Length: 621
Image 1 (cartoon, one colour):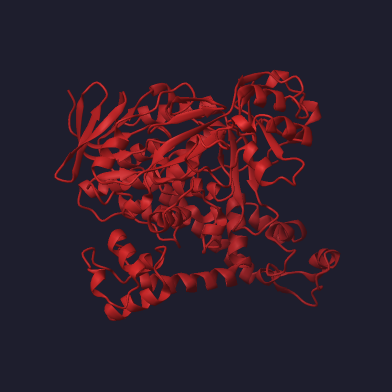
Image 2: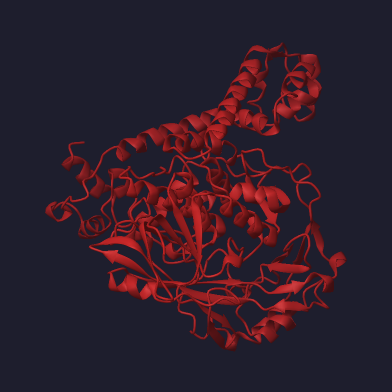
């Protein structure tokens, strides 16, 4: 009935969708297996993409040929660039999406790909022979052969939904849990754990008093995620902000004795950085109020997402408390919030390619690895799809260094450090974040995708070359063109900056804190005329490179130093037990995780600098 596929992807969430298109764009014949074709690319939680550090990940996915940025650009209803008051390393794009349009666009793009087939059914197990994954088994007993399998099961593995004292199996509201895979993986020697996440109530926007809430509009000149020629956003939809209160908190406390989080029914750890409303009240008892973001689910629906009110309290307590929030006095609820508990597999059981160590040609991506968030899942799917293709063609794994992308930081953290709670990306996790800005993801990563042989990447690479040429042209203009003191001095004095006594090259003015290219355009006609022909993103990237040149150079020196450790290869069969100078913990961790390089070994939790010195001496460095 089925041919042998190159790659089978199990699960069609954000990780599964990116895994499927990545493998397909590498040339593999792919089967995407999902329990429900109508929930492909479902935004299970908030209807938004990007945010702090997450926006950088979406740009990186796009630069590597993924589709998340393209889909977001086609379906977003609001765009905001976050952290604009900080340095450009912290700038992070975020979009409010139309939930239904987002999923529809993803499905359309998947179905348009000639290398992707679909099968709607629960996958109950894997076909494993002699330690190699050879396909999957479905719920009705079908065996579908393949050369590699990528598991992207999200929250569905033995998922358990909690609402107050009620609990029932499910991978998402209205959808059943997936069974069988966890049990087989345990038999194969994998270690598993439990995690939890939650979602807030959805309410009827027609019943809210919008005039009582603070309006949160999008950017005046909205940008976009993809580096391709996607449409610019017009006609933005506003979000709103309101707050809880002491009265709301007291009402919520009435249900604490029935909360599965407090009475021990939930065993899994939840995300520290996205706690439920009851968790916030308990942990931050001194706070009188907490901010709520009231987010539309789309242009053509009245359904509203109450961001910040995630809860697993009894539904009547959620309802009573929400009605005491300003603007929600007459609120009608579509469905209550809930917590969901699910199986995950500690990612220290993976190689840096996301291939499992126990079973060859088996890859994990997304929440099965202990992460949380659409963006974190999508980038793992992209990398797993690429590496699944590479593994069956005996090609070297595609691995991003920590200095090459947030994606590299995320996977390196997971594989080498593991996680005991849902992992979320932050800019603070990246030690080279001045190099890893959202504006230069295309310059950093598209050439790598081109070298991989990714389909349809040539036009993207051409755009990168054009962008680099334009940046160089602007730099050359600024280096050779002088600023007239009479024209620029009034502005310099107005911001408390020293006036010019003679003409100076424009590039030297950019080192001043209050002077950017927009200032030069406003006050110097020559600059205005020249720069008017360039796109806003090119001007921004040029300005950042000039203003932060010193910091960029220092970070690059740090990268070069670390790359020397990354170039020292460790053999996978190396016997660490034979090195008496290594600590006992280092011997155990290194023997289990089998790092590929000294650099990777240095980031394994429990391996000390002195252990690394021992390894360097042993390998002759």
